[in-house]
Length: 248
Image 1: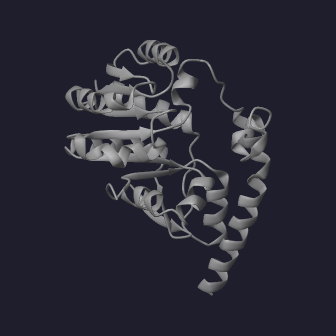
Image 2: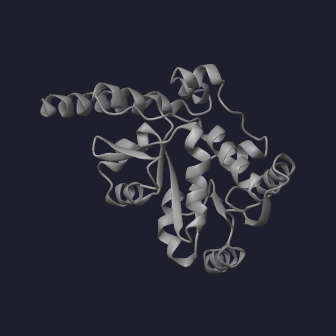
């Protein structure tokens, strides 16, 4: 745990952190000030359930400095299991809050992922939105495998306060713990569509849908396979009930 402003609870044996919006700036400042590497995980219910059967994903989440819940189901599970209730954040809103904090303190960012055009537009929009945040480099997810070490070295030399990793990077969110040893310090965060949203190539779900935990409906027309999330829902309910009964 970062400090006494962060409370870590276990939901189905997967760690989740409780950080209030009021404490977020102090927590972030401590992360970038201690000279260490810190991964922030934006945790969905799907990833929580996947982590129960994936050793690498579970280890990544357990080793993260902050695990921020983004799914309503995680909040529902915490209440059902009578755990302290985490604060849920909308992914893009959390990233905007994070970048605004770093901008206020004159920090830097490196962007890695997405398409070349999307990354270029995202970088331009990010500089416009956060003029006090120094963008010290970037690279799209399109590169030859042999070029990967050069990208890692470029990130190391740039020494950004935050490394934003997006869609197309090999290993997705797992890329961060697999490569963190190559960096001296900083915050690393993966979000699949972060650059697409910054590049205005993908819209965010309406706030009203997100507040009700129904943001998946917004993505259903373009991702029809999401309808099968009902099986994850049933599994979650079954496992949650088992944990609650066992507790008693």
